[in-house]
Image (tube, rainbow, N blue to C red; front, side, top):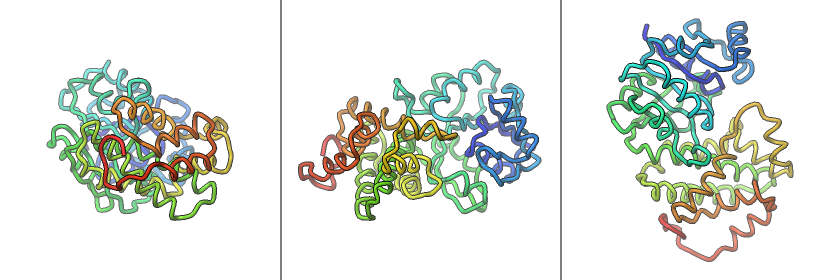
Length: 337
């Protein structure tokens, strides 16, 4: 039985472990928290992050990183985006076969450097083939074998196809894409729009404004992606509109949940302090704000979300600013609009 190492025992890492175990692979599920591994061994489920899902016997919780990766054909990095570099640094200390695929399933830009996750991984593991899995895929539904479709991308399409073959199942459909930049930009920026939609829901706003924010949010995601070198077509696919729709509307969305609390008047610091899991959209808002300036693109929704999160601008004021901007054409996707 071929082995896959999944680094990160949160909800997504656990769900992917169950999926791949069902595909016939032996799984090493690693965490740097010994207490969490002990709980997984004892309970046979991830009560902290994915309660109610019993782990197959072919999933082995593992504390030792070297042991987890030994003999694996692929390493899945399922830790939060801001932990990707530190984990990659530890992986780089091991002797790795040059054909060992490193798959990122994290969505975000690195703080301060604003690098995409694949760029961070390539910087620390330059000899390894790197791929990215993204798309509309809540862990809770994947773990319950609900039909899901995602996209995998890599600079070498053959690597993407290998990952596609590993993950494909009757309830988990995988498409390939050769636009690494577009897939990663889409996966990172959609969390900001989900925060904004959550704010609207918390304020009791209607469907019209939510539809407008999602649609114009997609335009902003596309505009930033194109400035960074992405293919515009990617944003009409699973990594773009697909992930945006599910993150903005789902009860499982942590980013929407943060926005919901903000819209009800709660303070960001208090909201985050009460969460056990990471809402990637908060850091993504800061990073997208900086990237907009670096690439000289106008991102009005992301700009106003930043103002709400970090400059104490009232949501009603931010909405007024968006609604009273100068008139423009719907189809302007590059530069300012």
